[in-house]
Image (tube, rainbow, N blue to C red; front, top):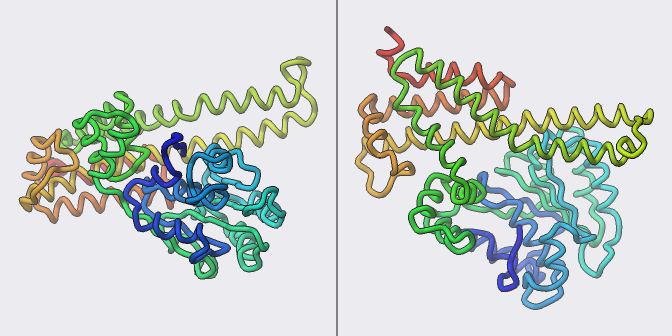
Length: 390
C-alpha cells in the first residue's frame, strides 16, 4: 500500500468508511486494544486496513495517519523498525514462524510508538502455530499490538477472536471501485466500469483488469466457457484449457521470484564468487525449493479459484436475466451469451450449476484434488442434461 504526499493513509481503503471511522478513533485512543481482528471478503483490503492503522498508530503528526511524516512513509513502505508484516506464499503459516513473531512482539519498540505485528492470512495458521499465538495474545507486552487478517471471524479460534477487537470490512460498491480506478490509475470511465464490475469488489483484481490487456483477455476466455459447453468433447477441451491457462498464469507470477530467490541464495553462500557449494548450501537449497513448490501450488489454486468465481458471475447473471432484474450485469459486455445461457435452464438449474462450481472449489482447496481432474468433473456438471445423455 502506497500513498502520495497529498493523501492520508486512509485514502486507499475503498468503500470502507465505517471501518475507517473505527480505526481513526482507536488511533486517537478511543477503543484501543492490544489485538485487532480484520475480517472481510477477498479483495476488500484487510491487509491494507491493518497497515494503514499501523501507520496511524506510529504517526508523528495530527491528525493521525497523515501519510506525509517519516513514520507513515516507512510503515507504508514496509521498512518501519517497529512494524512487522507476515504473509505466506505457501499453504500455511507454521509454528516456527509464529514463535519468532512472539519473540519479536515481546521486545520494546525502538521508537516511542508501538511494537506492531500484522499477520496476513491468519486463517492459514497451523494448529501448533495458533496455540503459540494464543499465549502471546493472552499475555501481551505493554506496548505491543497484534493485527490478524482473515476472511471471516469463523476462520480463527473462539479463544483468539474473543481477545481481539473486531474490524469488519465490506465489499466495496462498483461505483466506489470505478471512482478509485479513475482517480489512481487514470482509467477511462468505460474501462473503470468494466474492471469494477468484473472484479466484483476485489480491489487488486480490479487494478489488474484496468492495467493489463492480457488479464482482460484471460477473463474473457473464462466467462465465454458456459455458453460453449455444447458437447462432452467441448467440456473436456474447456477443462484442459482452463487448467493450462491458470497454470501458465501462476507460473508467470512465480517464476521471476523463484529465480531471484535462487540467485540470492547462491550469493549468500558464495556459490557465484567461489564457484563451489559449501556443505550448508544443499539443505538450504532443498528448503528453498520446498517453499517454492508450496508457493507455486497455492498460486495455481488461487488463480483457478479466481476463474471459478468468474464462472459463478456468469451463472448469477443468467439468474438475473431470467428474473428480469434491473441494472447492469457483472458481465454486461456478453449480455447476448448470458441471455442464451439463461434459456438453457431455469434459475434453479443455474443455482445447481453454481453449487457444482463451489463443490469443485472445495475439492481442490479442502481435499487436495488435482485441478485438472476437478475441472473435468465440473465441466461435465455444468453442461445441459440433454448433452450428457447423448
